[in-house]
Amino acid sequence: MNKSFLKISAMLLAVMLTVTSCQLLDGIVEPPINQDLTEDAVLGVAGSGQQVLNGVERQAALYLNEILPISEIASDNYTNTRTFYNQFLDRLDIDFTDDDLEDTHFDLARVSELALFGLNTILPGDPAADAIVEGELRFYSGYARLAMAEVFGDLPGEPNGPVVSEEGHLQAAIAEFQAVVNLAGVGSSAKTSSLIGLARAYRLLGDRDNAANFAEQAIAEGPDHLREIQFDFNNGPTSNIQNALYDRGTFDDLQPLPRLDFLDPKYSLIGGTAESPAALVKIEEAHLILCEAQIAQNSLADAQQTMKDIIGLVATRRTLSIDDNREGRTHNAPGSRPDSTDVIVKASETDMERPGLVLDRQGDNIVVPVVSGTSVTEAMVDAIASQDEAYEVLYLMRQEIFIAEGRRMTDLGIRFVVSFVEVQNNPNVSEGDAATTASLPAYIDAIKTELDEITYDPAVFPRVCTIKHNLNAILVANKSEALPFE
Image (tube, rainbow, N blue to C red):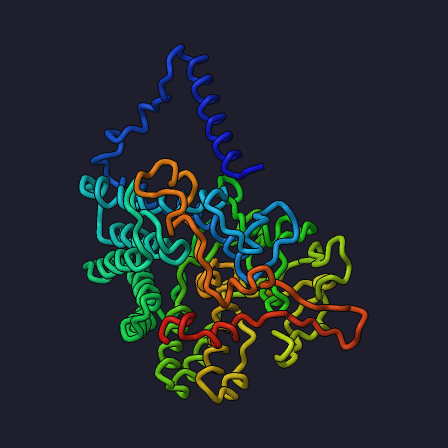
């Protein structure tokens, strides 16, 4: 059945049910009003800015709940083996009628609008407002615009507004992040997060010098900086990505690329009913951006030292010992995926074999990184002999360090499209516009149904799992189009 028809039918049904319910209760169609939740009950109240900030942080959690599973599915990080999560994005069937894209779009827009509401409406009347709260709200406003650029590219930046280009969103993000950095009395966390945001935005703009400059400032300001979004098992929202990677256990919904097996699951129960937090911004990014700038300048010795700094930083991040016996990896197809420590992995048919990347989950507890992890060693760094080799190692580090954080899709050049509801309600957007039509880089489009393909036969010894496409090598082979500083 046509997805657009299903969408329209669902919308009409929702409207009919709403109208019917109101008519049954009141005899007339009026929305319910809670007199304790009006603007007058909030405006001018001390601490109202902090209350809005709490709401923004909760909304950021809801946004991560939408973007993390689907962006990981859309990349080569994970393949989706069941129907519980999006079945289209594994083959990069990006359609503006996809409900998941709509939910992601709306939850991200709500982060932006709620942050702006706090800044423009609530803070001016809050007698307890200070630079710390303002800085946090401005950071989230900037983060929302940065995410619009990274996830969608072209997207309206305000309700019923015109479509803003990826560059336009990045410039808006830069303005907010810079305002945080310039704000007297701002908290160190918001400042460091915003410095990283500036480096991240300038990187996507291809501005190597500014990206490296702000990356260095971030490292100096917060050498171990980590901003996480919290989830709440008891009161919500719970974590969708934890559900996908761990909580559903034997369903094995999302399976990692074998070379990333040792990093999975990044999210699990951390004690009792506590949910794992998700990193929103971390200082590893500043080092990675600085390293990329050094490689682009062909300063290989500097880049190699920065890589070693990253390896040292990653080694300080927390890990977790978990019982993952429920994770069978191969559910009802025994032997279909590597699930033993004796498996050797090749990143492609022409890549070298690497042991130690696959864990055995059917015995004792496994230890997994829950902030950042990498398989890159100092010996691998020392062996780098060219710019292209350095780039490939760097992008492997980015893939590993950001796994399950929704970042890989952007590195691959993949973007989502404006949602169906936006097309129906925003006079500035029409079906068929560039913003509603998926456009993939040629190097991804040619293999879009094969990003997760592997060859593996557990009956052949030694056991070798070969990944069909080494996407890090493909990015480097197409560096003039794929890499921001080239």
